[in-house]
Length: 362
Image 1 (cartoon, rainbow, N blue to C red):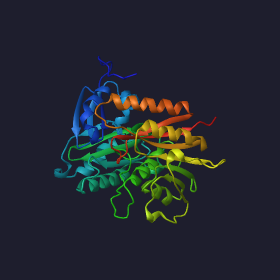
Image 2 (cartoon, rainbow, N blue to C red):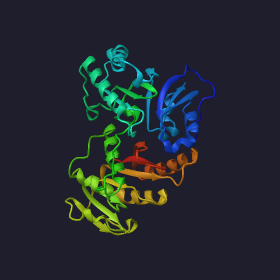
Image 3 (cartoon, helix red, strand yellow):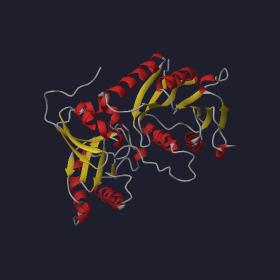
Image 4 (tube, rainbow, N blue to C red):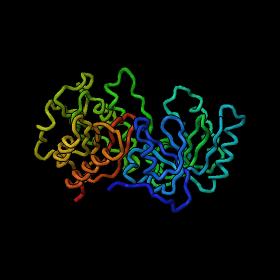
């Protein structure tokens, strides 16, 4: 079923900030329409300040997968902070007045341009948070990892466009950081591949739904070459059985916890009695073929075992075609006893989405 924005608003439009990755810019108007937006203002590269009479559509409609992050706007202050004397004190006092009695579990402040080389607003965000922490009662969450994913946090974003703030749970926002997941820079010459940043970000995103994977957890990785994701898992003291018909990067040779099988994924068969805690698939090629291998090998997952699957869409030129493919993949996994519990678009995802599933406990 295709969701549609209501033709006639039934409530007063609510201000909301949504983050639509720049790669979806060409279909942003359709995404916002499906969110019921009656107006929108572009902020930076990714953000849209909208008014909608149906904010539930931002989180529950099919188009929700195209929005990396969202936040109700309880306070907006369009201004040029860089040219304003006393901005930090004025902003901190205003936040105390508006949000102090609501007792957020924590306050986290980021920038509207997180990858910008200009460090001014990063410093401003840090200094503003420091002043807010002096004024507010002691928070229960001092770091993003300490947050209760279901309790309200005060999130703020600041940039040359002004200050934009609201309270919502990290899970409802679809990210623990203001703006979404933590940006992980993987451009070091020692990095095997930037795919490693995807699994690093995915594991952090998973904290919205479940505790971290215990050390020593056994992963089955499909299509592992050249080994960027493998390297990140090993760095977190996970065990990895990596499958690929091409060899891994030589820097991974001899790494503790790694077993590499030089084979086609379609031909690989685990030894009888072998079980895995998690399965990872970032393979290229038709997603219908990749998910068939995931389904086949998920039979070796422990009950409640995790699947992290990259749904690669041939090309995203409209909203409906990716949604149709998404419905097909989810129906296939559901029939095989895999339950989808989360989905997102990561920083290093392009025409693709990261899906999180778990094997049935039954």
